[in-house]
Structures are given as C-alpha cells and as structure tokens.
Image (cartoon, rainbow, N blue to C red; front, side, top):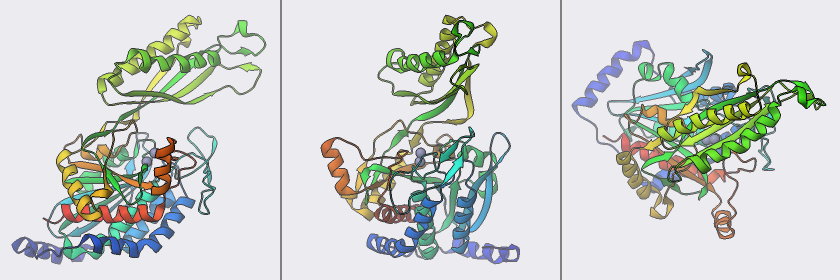
Length: 452
Ligand SMILES: [Zn+2]
Ligand SMILES: [Zn+2]
C-alpha cells in the first residue's frame, strides 16, 4: 500500500521505468498451473467459507469485507463500499489496485452476490442460510450462480499477480461487484465515479462458471454472447370482494392468470422467429386469504433479447396485453393495469471485443492446451459486466469457465439430460479443478495484457 510520503519515490521509479523498461521475466504454462495448484488448499477453504455464507444482492456486507481483507493482505490498495444505487443507498463494491510501474490498466471483475434459492446439493459445505428478500419473504440463500467461484478465482489471480510483479508492468484493478443478479451493481459502481476515482481501464476481463463445459477447460466467444435484460412489473388491478361474491368483484387473480398465458403468445406469435427473445413471468404475488378476492396482483417479468427494437416491441405488447385483459373484464378506467419497466434492473447485450477475444483465445490455448479451449455459444442469460466496457468503448471479454465433472458431463450429453446449471438448487461446480483452471487462465491472460 502506498501512503502519502511514499508518493515521491514511486514517481521516480516510474520515471526510471519509462527510461529503460526492465526485461520482463517469462512464466511458462506449467509454472502457472503448478503455482495455482499450490494455492488450491487455501483457496478451497476460502471457497467453502464463501459457499456456506452467501448473501443476497444489495446485502454483500460480510462477503465484500472478506474479499477486501484478503486483497489487503496481498498488498493491494483496497477501497470498500464503492457504489450508489438509484435510490441513493450505498453498495458494497470493492476496488483493489496494484500499481506496478507504467503500462496498461487492466480491470478484472468478480461478482459477489448469491440467490434466493434453498440449496439441495447435500454437500458438506452446503448453505443453510436464510434471509429476507426485497419482497419481505423469508428465503433460503445459495451461491447458486457460482459467484463464490469467481471471487475465489479473483483472489488466486490477485496472489499470482502480486507474486509475479517482475513479469508485468501497469496497473491491476480488481473489482468485487455487488448485485449482479439484480443487474444494478455495475451501474451503481460506475455511478459512484469508479473510473473518475480509480482510473479508466484499457481492458476488462471476467469469467462465469458454466455447467455445460468440463472443469479444466474454458470457452470463448467473439461478439455478442449474452442477451440484454429488462425487468418489468405488471400489476393487474381489480375490485376486491368477498370470495363468495365474484359478481361484485373484478378479479385480478383471474386476470393475472390470463396475462401469464397470453404473455406467452407475444414471443410465439408476434415476434420474428429469427429474433431470439424470452419473456418469463418469474413472480406472482397477490391475495392474503382464501375467501377474499384481492384488489390487485403483481407479476415480475424478465425480458431477454439481442435487439433494442425487439425489446421495445415486446414492452409495447406487454402493455397492450395487460390493458386488453383489463378492458375485457370491464375494469374501471382508473383501475387499469400498471406496467413499470425498471430503470435500474436493465442491462445491455454483453459483446466480447473480437480482437481482445482472439488474443485471449491464443493465450488460453498456449496455457491450457487446445483441447481445453472450447467455442462458447450465445445464450439468453444476461450480465451487467458489459457496462464496464462503456458501450464497447473499452475492449472487454468474458469467458466461460468449465465447472462440470467431465465424466458426469459426458454421461449427461449421452442421455440428453443436462447437469444442474446456474440458478438450480442442485448446481455444484467441481470446485478444485474449476478454481485451478480459472486462476491459471486468468493469470495468463492478465500477464499477456500487461506485458507491454
Ligand atoms: Zn446468476
Ligand atoms: Zn452469475
């Protein structure tokens, strides 16, 4: 860590570095893998601790503190609680900087949040945590998206890069990002002046664990890889009444039921089949008692597309469908549905910069071997990591990190039944080879980008 009085010598050193860049020591792929393997016992403990202690989006207090403390121990200059949400509340973002002379600035991002899922893996390090979600419900909490893997990999890479300062020049900027699952964490960090305060990176790297690729391998894709995501709330408002007297009501439960079914016809019958789109009703809340017809029912929807035009069309179709149902039921004008498109739970398409991706593919092949570097597919999943690229102005690349047991994966492919993946209560990455490969691949990529 640098303190005030040390600034002068640092500047002098930087000046010397410009004058004559010292030769950069090379690391070999086997050396990287061996040193990641050496870290594995301690990283595995960290992983299990994180897995047992998941925290929901917006609540990553202890997780971020752990990450910050570990990064400080490795000599990084760490700032905590970076991030301002749209409602003004503070986010638990972590920024860790390791400055090492003059050179490029590389941002590596890990997300930190877990999901409201009751873990059913039966593992001895399974989570039993319960918490209250944003809707006030008591929920189980699980790292069902493997962000605990990402944080562990980040710590492993942080360690390697701190140990290998003779092999690179530049600035490493490690990010612990909160609230990826609610896709408002990256935006919160940027809104809090991330780049103004800590510098704008030249490259952005990240990874996501994946149950469709074998542990020990990574998968890369150039161009768009993850869809845009838009969160929409639809509230069907009616007229409440006694459950025995439906004639006195305008029943929002029945209207919501119709909406859920009709909404499925939007993608199936109103959108060009050549345009990928998904509209899912993932939440439905209404009513308090069996014999009361409630006043309203609220549904939470997620919309995924690869095109803004299609997204806007579907939002318009959602509004029309909700209004049409209400009109059909004779809902009074002042009780028409309310459709809200979230201004914060929204993220653009994640597109991997082609030049950066091809460069990183070469690094991955020389580090892991060609049989361990697969092509990745585009999916309808979304990520807010793309926001760190400032609309593609900064080259960014996310790779998939294989997390499946290779034998189980081969069997799953053979019988056509996929292994439990992210967001499943049964998602269980084979953590040791996954973490080791993540650390090896990401360190090799970082060393390559910071070698000049
Ligand atoms: Zn997720
Ligand atoms: Zn995730």
